[in-house]
Image 1: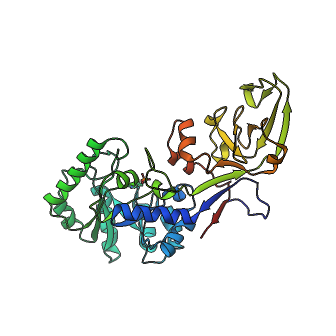
Image 2: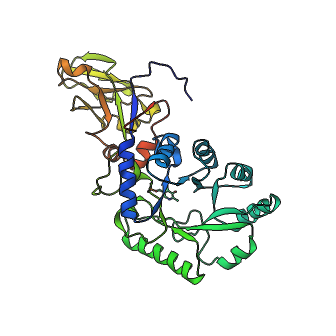
Image 3: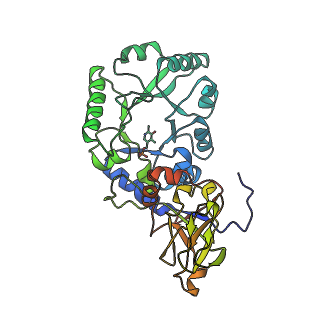
Length: 363
Ligand SMILES: *Cc1c(COP(=O)(O)O)cnc(C)c1O
């Protein structure tokens, strides 16, 4: 954590809580079910503590999904015990004390972890709720479809399976594969007459398929994005603004930044912006990115540095120069930046480092 000082760097991320609430409502209404708000990876870079508390208090969300036990413990510090915190990722025996102490619900994905957790529960004279992950085709975590469900229930009597979950690998890109995964999950539940609650859908499944399970698990859509197209009125939650901190006049033929990857084709005016790849503004945006000053596009010129980036401001008026610089916002969203970097919006927002202060608005 950085020392908090009054005057911050002029670069900050604005997190719009009203937009978050709007997206949560869209997710709920498309899901026609309760949701597990996915707030792993510090709520995809938006700030898990703030957003979870807000979702609990203002959006009637009672279930939260994190990746790691550490993320879960951080949330428990701000969420009351009737909020359920589920770890979606990996746990092992080193985490059991924390799980119990902070009332965190783990996802279990193989017999070895169930056996150890069951023994721990017996030793502590408690019955622990667990989420059971079935692998229907992601081939990451989860029990295979040949697992005898009844045997799990009988063998681990101090574990209470409260939720059956599977994860879709391609709900944004492959209809047939998604249907195949859904069918396999349904068949499994039917074969063992499973009575527990269920959860299958992530964001793109929520947007493109009809949900029939107890909970959905919206992540990226709650932050305003869904691949491949947003026709659901989702509103991006994060914007990033900065300032021109220095202006440089170049003569035709002069070069900019490391390794001289940009040469001025005419006399030019260049602005220096205090954001770089250490802030999560990817180096892949060198000579590709665009920022907006007073709504006017300004190309990134030269290599993105660790802490600074240069943009072409030759075409700006004197009066534009005091304006905020939009790095991410209404003229350029994370999906567009992602395309320039050959990645997805998830990676763009998750990468914004904690050197950039988050400013919360519209609570
Ligand atoms: C991250 C994650 C989600 C959320 O996925 P989005 O595509 O962001 O909606 C849902 N379920 C699991 C198990 C996850 O790991």
